Amino acid sequence: MKIFKHISRGGCLVALSASVLGLAGALSAQAATPMPELVQKNGKYALMVDGAPFLVLGGQANNSSNYEAALPKVWPAIKDLHANTLTMPVAWEQIEPVEGKFDFSFVDALVTQARENNVRLVILWFGTWKNTGPSYTPTWVKTDNKRFPRLTNKDGTTSYALSPLYDSTREADKKAYVELVKHIKAIDGDQHTVIMLQPENEVGVYGAARDYSKKADALMAKPVPAALLKKYNKKSGDWNTVFGKDADEYFHAWSIASYIDDIVAAGDAVYPLPTYVNAALKDPLNPDQPAGSYASGGPVYSVMDVWKAAAPHIEFLAPDLYTPTSQSYEATLNWYARKDNPLYVAESGNKPIYARYIFSVLGRQGIGFDPFGFDYTRYSNHPLGTTLVNADMVKPFATVYKLFGGMDREWAKLSFESQVWGVSEPDDHSDQKLDFGPKWNAVVSYREWQFGLRKWDPENKNGFPEGSEIPSGGVVVARLSDNEFLVAGLNARVTFGAGEANAKKGMLLDRVEEGHFEDGKWVFERVWNGDQTDYGLNFTGEPVILKVRLATYEQ
Image (cartoon, rainbow, N blue to C red; front, side, top):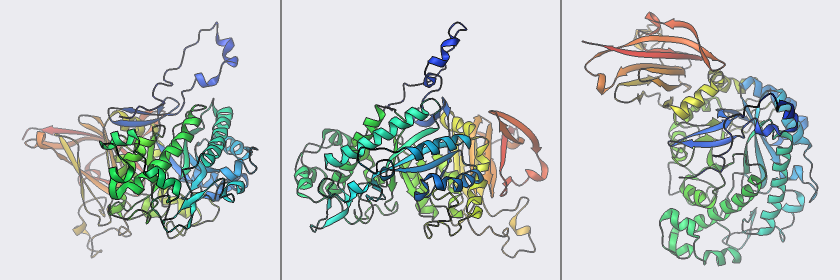
């Protein structure tokens, strides 16, 4: 089990007596507010911000929106999205255009404006790798292939990607990253506007399994590191002997992971914010997909254990999801929601069809969802994303975020301390069953009316609500007590049922309250009954939160 580097920090505020309050101005404000940290308890995770669980409802800006002139087109989109977090790149070429001379003016503007907009920040470090390439490195790096060598392809040609095997590249990247971390601490160490860092971006290489240089070949012939042997329960030997057909990719994954871990460790020594690395994905339904046809060496699901062994300073690995089909999307979520890895969607497409997946993420105790491309700079990455470049792009996600926005802290706490479930509407609109233990269960169905049965509709030959052919629904449930649940959803029907322990009793919806949260407290609005409950609990496209109490009676 991984021991997180932040687990011992922060916690309770220290009560100061009146006699020492006058010294408060001279004391560091960092002592008053705990650092952001990732904590683990009983196999569950929470991202702690200001000492309490925090759910990231994120929006990632486009890559080239990382300049002050673009920020006025970013904040309106984040506001319309109802996001509580903006994810924004900071590029190596941006902060160190001349070696040894640093410019953090954009970081200053970003942090200041985030506070003005009441939004937290996740900063992406575009260093040695961005989408596997060096395009965001400074000119003095990407044009000097002798000092900062690229990989060698298997046929002897030079790759586009930088090699992770050279100290010169790693040390230059590390120096810039540490300077960035130092600056964040200096301007934000007392307020924690920045809550996480992503070192590098979609690492790995396309078109090759690894670096095939003479240096790489020599390292492949050496014994596999002990930490990796232990992880896989293998006996000592060189890479090919130990890992056979997987040796090339495992070697490359180890090389990249240990490279980034060294950089993160240096940053942690200055200011230990939580860190994660994102993955350009391997097909989750095709484990035999050959290395090089995806970003080989990156933290794809087949080498997550390599990364866990090589990079103990990196808290978690996160998928970038741009495959809209439910079978593929859900399979990827299953790969990354592990006991040793909290689920966090680092990127997702911004087509409307992706918005429903936040229900599946949160049902797997996910700590955040961060779809890509949310600003009004009029850039579209279609066909991966939507063709929309205005406020219409935001609406499907804003509806879901609005549902959770009023209870982001409450949901995060329930996910960490209680039990949660969640499902998203599959492509075939099929029903899904939720098992709440021996006493209760529920069936989630889609394309339903708010009342009655589909077949009752004489004006619609198919019996389905208009527009429901495109999957958009989802439901989440959190346990409040043995017989009480918090339920939220969109475009779905939830029908509660009795489990095995209550099979011989009659069951009923004892009380269904609609309400909302204010300052962490449940605020009652009205009771659902009669027509509103006779045919399940029916959620439309408008955000609704229900508190449901179940009961039984003797038959």
